[in-house]
Image (cartoon, rainbow, N blue to C red; front, side, top):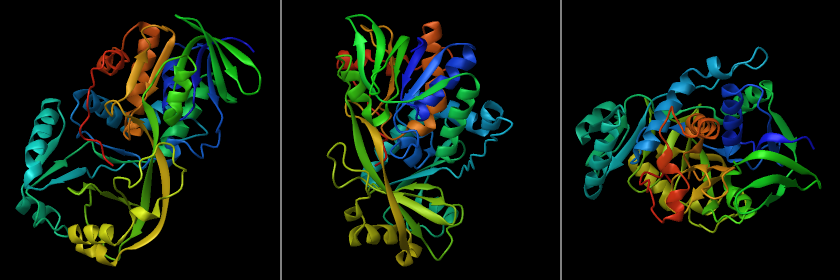
Length: 389
């Protein structure tokens, strides 16, 4: 096979975004995406709840979200093609985190971090919450944190497809195959081996394999603490409207947001074994969950579960944060992995950061160095405390 300047393992949203930025920043660069699931039936990019928020506890994640929301607002300008216009359906009603009395200290601490980073967030007491959301029961709530702008949801699969279409229009090749090995010595990867029996020589390799990133890293003898963590999303119908409904995070751990004329909701999983089949865990929807939702939103006492689906978080079990950048030993192996449920919203910024790192030696637009691989080697976690589900 013809050599590639860059081989990207995986063409989900992270691989597609990286390919887009590489060929935008350096036109003519030979980039090949290798993808075994070209229908993206198991891809997190196809199964994401596709939301975006500023309310993180690590400033680097807030920076990625700030870049991400600006990119989403102008997605047509960045990614539109004459035969493929970009329509993401972006809505920005905000995220609303609710806290009971024992949780207010943590919420206030997070708020200070977010305000310092420039996030447009505010704290609301119970009376302010009642006035803004009269359909919400806050009798047991002491405080709420609301994103006033830059938070909401969008069509994630459409964003992924737009990145992919634009990258291929810029000359990126997509190869329908599966990576089964990496030819390497102690300092360099020379080729990617394929299930079809071929071998693809390369200058640089990007691990963008999502929930399966750990398996790809192991082909180079590199331990990477990424697991496929199944999450179930339930589609609900409610007979009463909930005006101005944000993406709601309940103190008990469940979340809910509008999706067209329905709502979608999820909670912390009952079963956490890595790599569970991509089938909804209906045991997570029970009388206790129903009662919890109806307590917070009385109109939901009359809800109906319409359907459900399951997708994978690419969970970084080390610290719930992304790994972006090169391996310190295998210098031409790069990572864009482990976003732990907030990858779709960070794809635009993460892809740009990695492309700049690969082409220029550092990320210049968004400072992401603290997400580098070295922290894994030195056992220095950068813990993100605001992980949903």
